[in-house]
Length: 161
Image (tube, rainbow, N blue to C red; front, side, top):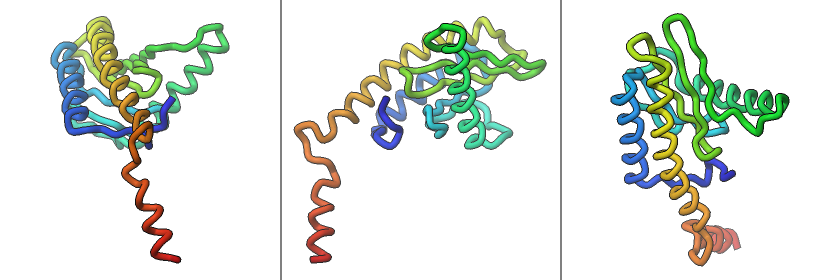
């Protein structure tokens, strides 16, 4: 699994991710969609403004998913790819995307769990394709091409010699 620090989003990547999130919201009638990397960093959001700290939410989401990975192993599953937290008024569905990020859909009584889960599956497929391209491109950096920082080390060494 690539670390988030190796991510290199192009403007086109950001637009494509935002488009997937907006389509999810329109098709499911969910309130908000978030992408969180497995280390707890917020990657993207769409939809209604959140009335909570998105940074804390992202951290807790990653921890929740990690804890559930361990629970899955304890009961003999490789992983739980989708998690559901259903409340009286607010609910959320979390889904793994390419074992690299977590897609979260927050929703209320304006829609149903079934519809959100159905539309979330399509979004996971689309995002998995996008992130596979993003991460393969990030992995290619340095393979046959110099890094953007490759000359910087030499120049710094020259300054201090």
